[in-house]
Image 1: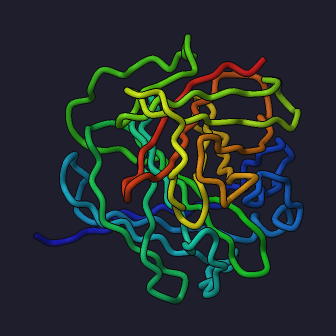
Image 2 (image 1 turned 180 degrees about the vertical axis):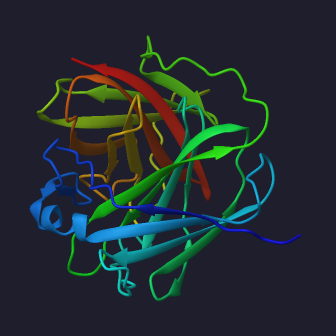
Amino acid sequence: MKKVAISIVLTAALLTACGKSGGSMDHSGMTQEAGSTQAGNVQAQFKLSGDKTMPKQDTTITIKIQDKDGKSIDKFDTVHEQQMHFIIVSKDLSFFNHIHPDYKGKGEFTVTTQFPTAGDFKMFADITPTGMGAMNKSQWITVQGDLPVQKPIEPDASLTKVVDGKEVTLSIDHLMAGMELNLNFNIKDAQTKKPVTDLQPYLGAVGHVVILTQDAENYLHVHPTDEKASGPDAKFMTTFPHSGVYKIWGQFQQNGKVFTVPFVVKVP
């Protein structure tokens, strides 16, 4: 089949954990002002293989990182074992995928994946160009086909979930916008209720957390305060930039398998 590329050029500035215009967030969850003057000098081109994107079919995504003049940016810092963390979410945030494109050189990354259904999806390229600080570039795309019923994004009545045989409870010390706060994921065996103490490093840390606002416009990628922890607690620090509904995905690894735990909270 002949491949036709769909190209989208991004120039949007970074959305940050602290709500400061154009700033960036380092991987301990703290504000890093170095990126605030650099993110606007970086753009990304996303190209999707095929004449149209269809659900449940392999789609190769190419991401080219360039400066504002269209020149390739060649060097990227390796952050938690990867030069790019690539996040894909559906519009209703029911689908979440955290994958890692291969770096081909000259600012070009590629990854092959599948979209589960038709509808709108948002892609986030999370990068740290050398000397520029952490930043992300994002773009919506539309997958062709019959749109499934959209699920409402509603705050969870309980912040305890059972996933892959693990009972995970999220606690937040003070849920308030604009204030630095702590997130703690407590993990137990769902059957025995015994604390899980053998979490394995996932991308070099005990876990990773991605947070999005309900409209997917504000993106936070948070890393643990104690990267070498092994459970039952995995602690993170971040700041919700403003009031509203947020979805939180915690990712952890045990026995060689990564499990993802989603929570929805309303921040006053």
